[in-house]
Image 1 (tube, one colour):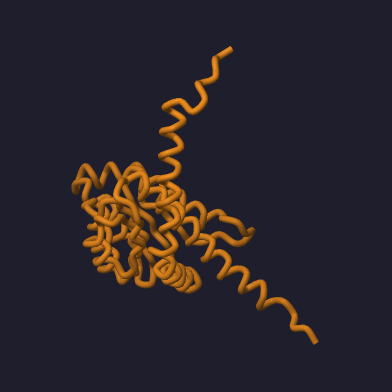
Image 2: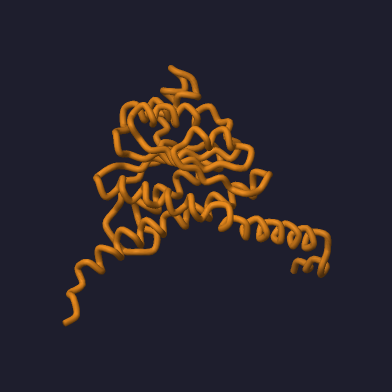
Length: 210
């Protein structure tokens, strides 16, 4: 049987310190992002109610977030309801490798949007640093297609944020804290969209009381 680690040993102390840091950072998200988050939800709702598609992109951990959030909309988040049109541009390995090989990696998302994007669609572009060339190029391609761009970034990405129509700038100076904020913001965005679109429709179908 494995011996239990010493109570309050160095690993536990480090775990507690890291969790406290994450909790403090999470507490700052409401002050930093609530207004922008509501505006982002309004943009997604307008897009989806008008038959548009929400595209997501990012690299590394942000690619995982892009795929996670796209599936929350395409499948469901909390409410049983019809599917929503959401696509992660990170998932088609043939497109990624062909475009990367023929045009360079910096074009992997932009090139897809040139073929798939349409006016009224939304791009959710995720970069913790604000310096990912592939994501920046996707922003430019989305605007050329007449799309709205919602950026997710960190405090050092304010230059990137200024190129987006709406931006969620997560508090925190290090990548893990920014990524933790991004998934919290993304989950909240999905919840706002789902509840607004489907609870509102349910209320509209409810017969009026006499």
